Amino acid sequence: MAVLEEGLKSHPNDRETLQALISFNQMAGDTKAALGFAERLAVTAPNDQGLAALIRDLRRAVKSSAQ
Image 1 (cartoon, helix red, strand yellow):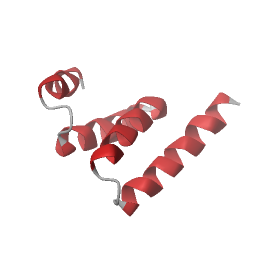
Image 2: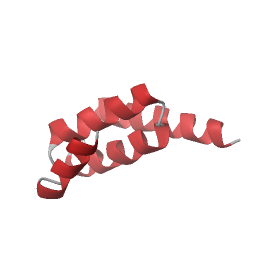
Image 3: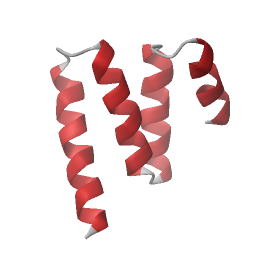
Image 4: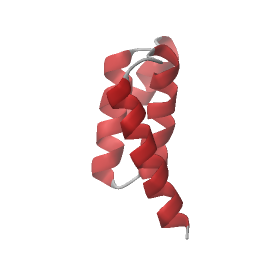
């Protein structure tokens, strides 16, 4: 994940890198980080309904883990 995050410094809106970071963070159980990358991706793809649904799910998961 560190390599992918480093790549974002050069290409901050790279869709594939952001998608990979979302997936890897979800698998690692870091829902908050996954949400951050998903929200970042949403800026470049505002009409992506699948991404919007993922963000809603991640927000719910982050909220429920905080309680």
